[in-house]
Image (cartoon, rainbow, N blue to C red; front, side):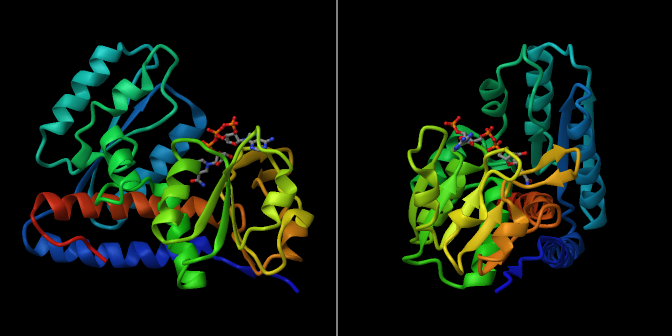
Length: 287
Ligand code: NDP
């Protein structure tokens, strides 16, 4: 059996279309959502992300504000910019592209963002709100994974889910979202024992490890839904954390890399910006 491909690229295109329609309706009421993206330094991968974020923001009809600062910017200057953006009514979402240069305290910078404009969902308040099941801004990558899982599986209730990776930006919030949807969730990491056996129990397997082809085909329960978050640059091009060719023969459904989780992440950033704009204007959350 060959797994169904979960086409993140097509899903993201559909989501962007729905967002564009909502933005058009908001603009009719005199509201234009605005997203500010701050890039410090010249990390090539970050530059690519920031460029595509800006492009897609404009394509759905939102305003895009890009702030590029040199790598040696003082933390105080970055904090001053964030303060200014927090107070700017035209800016509904603020994203500080990570990683930041080594001399900056990443947590302090993220926690300086107004939680209502924290479209990455990394502010400590949003993390706490998500963990306690309250309305929050949800990190984009796991939100995209959740949307694809719901779309493919319908209800996640009672499913066994294993998330490999416990980072604050992917693994932990992914686990929270799965738990919120009543999956039975296990978080695995580098100290987990007998990871292959654990993975074999998973109806839903999310790999967010950062190692090319780390999850093998025989770690996968036949028929499982596999979400591959990994983006690894190798000599063979961009590959995921899952051995795709082998996994495809066992899984029920799988996201490809590229074309799976990646496109959904930026679409969810736009969705979060729309949500932030709706909330600040007293409108209901977009669907
Ligand atoms: P991190 O490096 O922050 O976290 C990796 C996690 O994997 C850690 O929790 C680590 O465990 C775990 N891990 C590492 N080695 C092993 C191992 N041998 N066995 C089990 N677990 C292990 O990465 P991120 O969460 O930031 O990203 C993960 C991947 O997702 C990367 O490839 C990244 O590029 C990609 N990514 C993709 C995005 C997208 O839009 N598609 C967005 C964000 C990330 P421990 O905590 O014990 O060290």
